[in-house]
Image 1 (cartoon, each protein chain N blue to C red):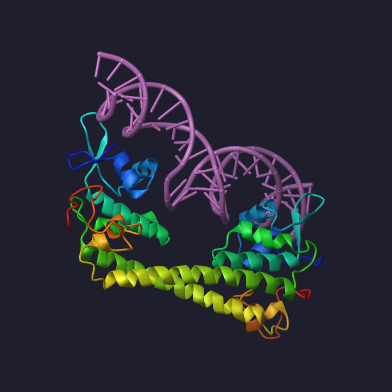
Image 2 (image 1 turned 90 degrees about the horizontal axis):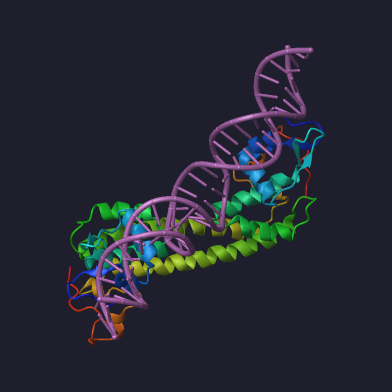
Length: 152
Length: 152
DNA sequence: CTAAAACCTCAACCAAACTTCAGGTCAACT
DNA sequence: AGTTGACCTGAAGTTTGGTTGAGGTTTTAG
């Protein structure tokens, strides 16, 4: 199906242009992420600016950002026009922040594991990765909840 | 329920000591991640080394590693004894690799977004984040699939 | 005009990692 | 011995991000 001359795209057109399955487009519409007009016969016709929205959805997906969050940023967008540079800048700043947070968390875990790999732990009991809230560590040589944890 | 003198822990004990819900312990057992003996009456009794396994499961969870992967590394472990330092070292090396890969992917996306935020894109049409497989970019000023994409 | 291709809705299903519930049993304390 | 709390099983429900299928309608190409 070729792009119609009417400036509106069928669901198949959009699927072809974005690489998103028709079923996913239906789904996004049910979730309120995109909107469509309908023909007299009830078929969907999309304005071109949904393409941009779908691009944004795809970016979010690549970044592991849930659709609910996408819906959230889309709420601030006008429904009837192409999201513009300013919109995209706001969104991308927000998401960059999320990515940064995730990266930092991963870095933290990585360094914990590196410690672990080369660790001088006398016993795994003292490993802070395996025992994040370590009552052994914090209570010194005090009483243990369970006596005689068998060493490895 | 206090720790029994028998060196075996009830499911409630394990739940209390690990912070993992009883239902999750049942689930882990169905998945083959942990094993239990049973009392004459059919109740679960866990050897202490399941605590270590559960720690490892919790670490994996924090790191976003799926249970199937945990099951995979557990397959190489003896079922009847506490996983030891060598075991944990092997596992942590493996998972550190995964974390590193994830971090790199995030870094890549972050820098893309940073480009985007301060981007000199004349139009969003040329943004490589929004248009990863950009036929506009690659085809120069050639024919477009759809004419007159309205600028933002 | 007709047949094929594309489209429609609604319902069910998938994976992961659990939780919740119903209905019944076990064990620990008094 | 009895009560209460902990435990059992199995089935079903939850969330996220969709896919698949049935059964029927619309649009488009020839």
